[in-house]
Length: 130
Ligand code: SAM
Image 1 (cartoon, helix red, strand yellow):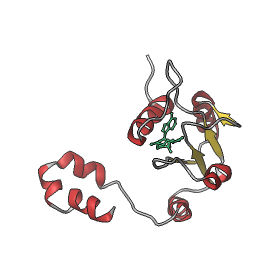
Image 2 (cartoon, helix red, strand yellow):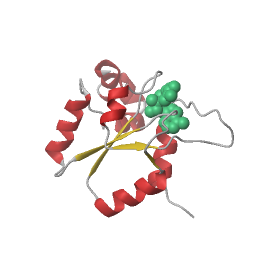
Image 3 (tube, helix red, strand yellow):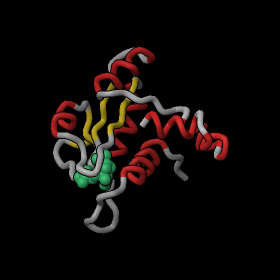
Image 4 (cartoon, protein in one colour):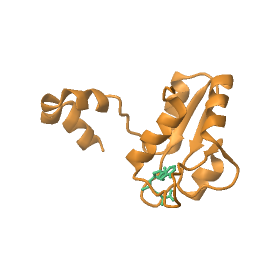
């Protein structure tokens, strides 16, 4: 990950594509989820609220609207966790503060690429309406 990020920030990639460099300069690499939580805790006061995502989450999920309201009312730090091709490990889902309802569309197939899932999720939670 560091090699790829370095290509776009310090290497030839960043020179050729400055907007990609700007995006990737925001990337920080950590070895574990605990390290990510610790890094956020150093910058934010209060607990880090982890939010698990997944195409197959069913039980005890909050809707996008509910989570939007919770974030507005309670404030604090929220860490959205997205998985790989197999989704998140069960223990990550179980230990998360919130489980977010899956993104769904007009029919039953909803296994999105992670970049699509991130984009739709952020838009449903933070996008401007109207
Ligand atoms: N089969 C996996 C599953 O059931 O979650 C999908 C893996 S997908 C390639 C990689 C990641 O994208 C997932 O771990 C999840 O974070 C996110 N993702 C994919 N589809 C999603 C959906 N419909 N709703 C929410 N997140 C989704």
